[in-house]
Length: 246
Image: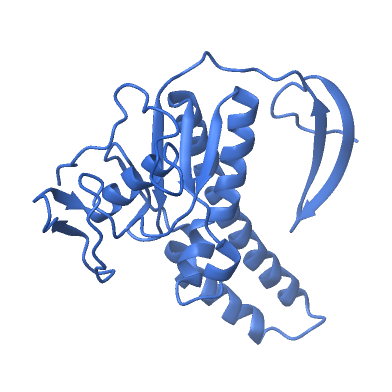
């Protein structure tokens, strides 16, 4: 069977799986290769995951816009599904309509996967330690924010990030998500704020804070402190919490 190889195979082939998606067929090879660690890096970063308008915000203040692939294609997908529902079973027109729906879903999935891989690679290349919240994604995907979480694909992204980091010899650390969006990263003052408040001034120290950047800095700080607040390890140079500008 002839195939189009997108890139040369590396290492020892362990398995080959034939997969069908709509009218397309794929063969997936799993190979055994030696790890390729990147040069050591003392740079560390905390990331706060979101759904709208940002997919993630870093402790350094970078805001990565959420691509919202499903949301952008939702109207076109709904139209295709309505056309499918009007077709009678057994008719040739129904098969064509079904393939059209499958093609739209496949495009959304591939766009999301491409975004995840590129963002994870960028983070792994730049930082030796990446810290994120240990989220109960399954529970969140059943809450009122389920649609946004499914569109963002948090679970898939974190899985991709973890294996890329392991292959590159980097560290990914999960921390307790409690109070990360309520604590001031400068003085530690805790204040519960409604979700719609995105920027505020800390009443204790007067620091001007963006809520998501502050949360990412708290996430990074939790990787270096114990449950009682004791320091487990010093911050790498250039990664101490600081008051972010808006």
